[in-house]
Amino acid sequence: MSVTRKFAHQGLRVLHQHAPGPLTAISLAVRAGARFDDRLPGIAHVSEHMLFQGTATMDQRELNHRAAELGGEHNADTGYETITLTFDVFNEDLDDALAMLAEQFYRTEVAEDRLNKERRVVLDELRGRQDDPTDRLHTRAWNAFFSGAIAHPICGTVKSLRSIGADDVRAFLHANFVHERSVLGVVGGCTIADVRRAVRRHFGEPARKAGPVPTVAAGRGGRLRCSGGNGQATVLAMMEVPADPAELIAVGLALDLVGSDPDSRLFQEIRERLGLGYDVSAHLDWGPDWAVASVSASAGRSAVSRLERAMDETLRRAAEGGFGDDEMKRARTKLRYRYASLGESRMDRALSLSEGTMSGFPLPHEAERMVARVTREAVEAAWRRTVGARRLWAISA
Image 1: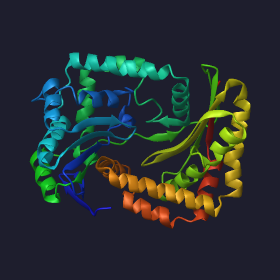
Image 2 (image 1 turned 90 degrees about the vertical axis):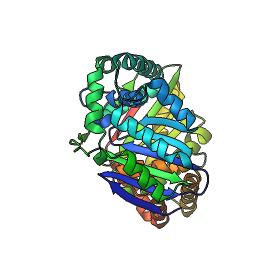
Image 3 (image 1 turned 30 degrees about the vertical axis):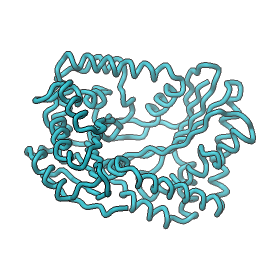
Image 4 (image 1 turned 60 degrees about the vertical axis):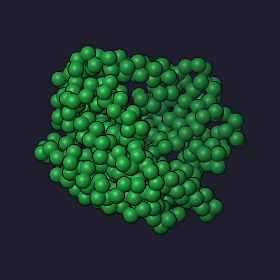
């Protein structure tokens, strides 16, 4: 992995890695995700859409034509913690690309007609998710497992989306798009000197103070039942995890051993031994002060009780009996492969620099060293804590 160089400009944190070749990947992460929606769930996601609907100097068509002229991929994404703008361009176009991102960051315009159009787009997206029983289960479970700032869908609700006005989006962008809560990650053939010059040229507006960060609180555990569909059942277990990088790495290794890959215990139990499920998944989500491990599986509706029992027993047996040396070796190899794959993608590296720094997670090379050092005993202890923590069983049948 290349050396990571850092500097700050009027509160904006910038990280750069040199990667030989003709392309540069840029990721601008702003801590303005759905956590900051407040009374209008979905406004962060709507605001992300509006970043591409015109600025003070370019309308929607000009903005998108200019991005195409630079030849790169120009996109954005909204999570609970961040809205992240990305741009992948030729090295010589770094200055123009950062000029465009700065234009979106500082000078996005929110015209009522453009907002109405994008609202329809988001409403269609939301309705599509509501029609999916599995997605509906995950949404309801998430909203029950958490309380406070992230206890709602990133897309919002039909009611909240219809109540968002242009003034609301303008106020949201003004309050949250500030240097203090932004990190720029740049990976590519450009030099650190190139990045410094472009940042100083285009991100020079006076820094404004960020407001307080809304609080994330624990919700409920226990059981939650939802109506299903298509004759299928899904069982989801959500487990609370401390938002500590060392704990997250240990739990992540345990999830690799327990979860969804063909060599994992849950896959082998449900798919191979019992022949129950057609879909098994396991993943870890986190922010600076919250984290959750989720494991789910699907089967025929008549098998829902067997499915839940098999999942519970598999999670518990791993906590009680621990993991073997051969399992730990496989888990470390898989994580090494992921970090190696990350190193091959400029954009993935740029995202890890910006979003990882924003969330307080170690940089990839630091995390890789932590994976190499973590002991089997630490992984087993972390998994026992996870299985014994607050848990929500959500069942769709």
